[in-house]
Amino acid sequence: MRFLPGLNPLAKLAAPIPAMVALVFVRDVSTPLVFLALAYLVLLVGAPFGRRLAVTLFVALPAVMILIAAGFALWADPAQVADTPALARIGGWTLHAGAIGVGVATGLRLSAIFALALIAGAATTGADLARSLVQQLRVPYRIGYTALAALRFVPRLGTELELIRQAHRVRAAHAGAGPFAAIARGAGYVVPLMAGSIRHAERVAWAMDVRAFGAYTTRTERHVVPWRTRDAVFIAVMWVATAAILLAGGLSLLG
Image 1 (spheres, one colour):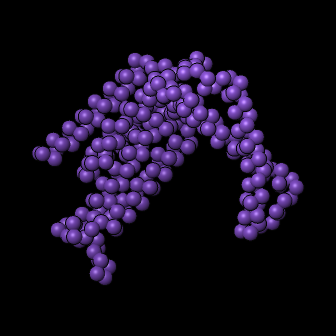
Image 2 (cartoon, one colour):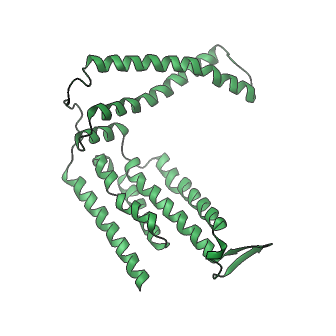
Image 3 (cartoon, one colour):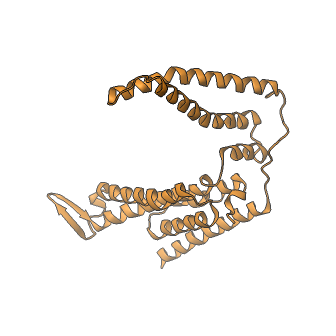
């Protein structure tokens, strides 16, 4: 049973924050590597594992990490790594081992931060996050539920755009191949998409007015996102693991 979807969104946000902040300041290789392994472990055990998450974890994230490591290795200041062994020379440019270390450490840090952020992102819906902000953090519902309406507007916009594309296809509007035809098709979507968006926004506004949205300081909740003991336990476990990893890294540096 995957446990992350059953946790409160605020718990999934708060649990990795200390590790993400600490990764901004560490400069070694082992600490971000351990945090990256911890994030992968939590995601593989607790998150709903589908094709999108698999591609992100095993294709996209490693590829980005390699690109970042290579980029920072090439951009590293030669004066700061001049005392390390030279690995390659092209004309007057020299690639030092220290530059590789800087690139690898930076790539690991950024990848670990992204993987830790996925703990909340891979198992949290925008609707539950908005509700938890209102219910647990006491964010005014005028802000929280307005954000919720905006989040629901995005898939509606995608559906509207697909309907417009199908209608244009049926009418053979701006048919043809090539960049100019593609630009003409895209320009033809703008006006009907804006008209549909305005109609949808008006319907949402009317629905909110009918329900007296904003008339009172509080509202009853139809969908409750509770805070349970397991949420506090998850945060405590992640914070203790973060402290242990940082302490072990500090002791290894002192040793």
